[in-house]
Length: 204
Image: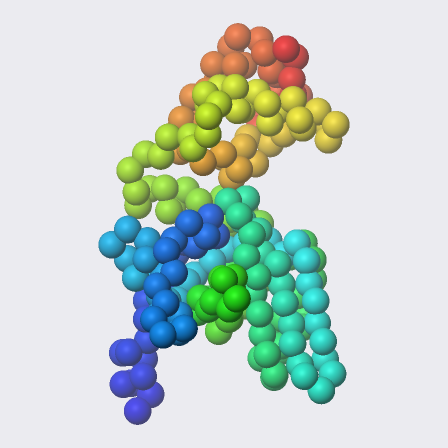
């Protein structure tokens, strides 16, 4: 029986939150069926994200909610009943790998988790690069040219003492190669400098 069930289990797609949010929910007779993203019909997902908010009600009606962010968007993870034990030890700021099912309620998409595991934050960057590698090179999805977008983010990071190149790669919807090429150019043009390797500050 278990073998049969595992065969029927849907593929857990490695995906970013932004892609979930721009997917088309397919709903029939009020019931959510799957997300349509290109040719894929997505029910289960494999996410890497940071926890930016947490709520737990451990009373009569047990309920827990995490707000997840992977720099491409935010989505809620929701657990009910004894399943809240999956997230009891999670705290704001943790980086997680989550395998779970996409659900929809009141026009809101959320994740019901099967597996929740703490991971090192660096794996979020690894996942972004992994997903990009499986697609064609993505241009920056913005009205600003990539160079201007990079400079704007470095300027905005001045109050925190600069911006890490890894953070630019996480936050900007363009390939790592394109971002690194533009960073090299703005360094050569003397618009930014590196106080230490991988950290950028604005000179203007």
